[in-house]
Length: 236
Image (cartoon, rainbow, N blue to C red):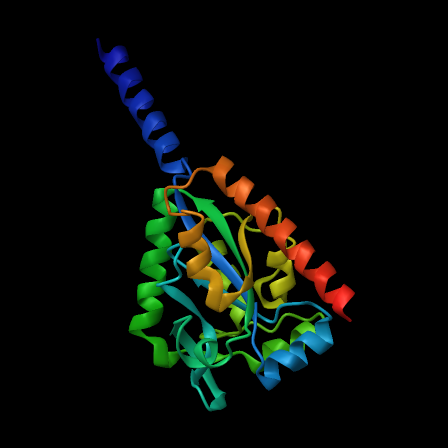
């Protein structure tokens, strides 16, 4: 009888462990490019289409976080912020382009991410922008200091700390392009940020959308973008 009870407890533990590892929640990684001077400099240096990285908890990007300027007209006072795609820099720069992708995580990991972001918000003024880290990336040398992050470093740090999927790189060397090339991410949208929510509405894309539907939307999105590029080339 004792052996059966012990075996049952082990089976329950295994079942709970499997349940905790089921990736039934989603977070969203957004890379973008605005028309700000820092963004233009980063794009010119990296030769990449995007210069900024954000982490969102919902598909509509209502809860989106990153390290960026705290005030619209002051690019030098930066730190941890909650971003809004309709106000601030994003609201001003209507031609901001973006790429929104989904990362599947377990419920347990999602809870850890939410808690971590709440802690960041609670102490947000303690966090500074990692300017030295940006210079370090240019020379392929990670500069990682407590309470100091740049945008892509912050996003990767959250993933790594909470046990989400990551790629093999030091947080202090992570760039927006690493997320663009990461095959773990499932592309949802690529285009102008101001059109993103309308795109979700037009295609009936919600948190509950299944993988197959996302794949169909991804193919359609890429095809539409290819047509736009060809049309622009023809016009020129």
